[in-house]
Image 1 (spheres, rainbow, N blue to C red):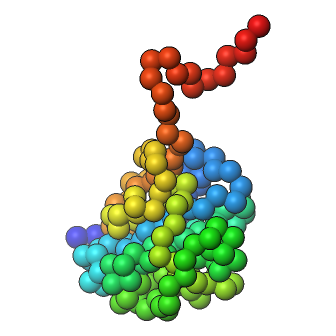
Image 2 (image 1 turned 90 degrees about the vertical axis):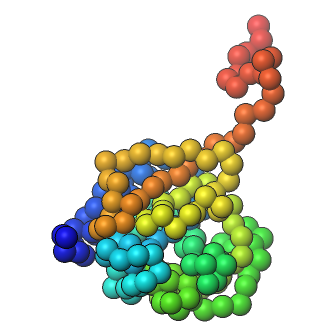
Image 3 (image 1 turned 90 degrees about the horizontal axis):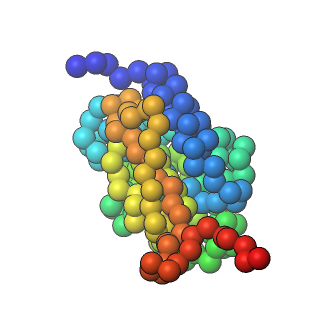
Length: 188
């Protein structure tokens, strides 16, 4: 089996994020959800080998890239926190999200959430969000946090370290029937 290389994983994630953000072209102030299994990234089974070093690498790559584009981050916690999400308090309050009382730990919330807690200005956990898109590193199941209609994106990067990575964006639902229009056609 290949050996895990943190530097290579960082490079993969930077390329993955650049391609994802370029394709998705999210509007400023959009909320992006991150699911991340540090265990999977360094070649272990999800939940069985959390690594704060890997979690910090993930946040140190993703957070500045989102900040540079005026986007906000919500980091999904593990099942032990009922998939609660860590984000900036001001953004949670602005969006009307319900705060829950918990501080993430490496084995309850996950190493990536702990790293985000260290890096955010005023972090808070919330129970539910509706993001416009997201990144899932290690098959952590972020779909519950992305609004309908979800659209998977593809980039040249399918793994970060040993973890499978997927990307979601979304669009508004198209309603109507055979007479409905989805592109404006001016009336003369």
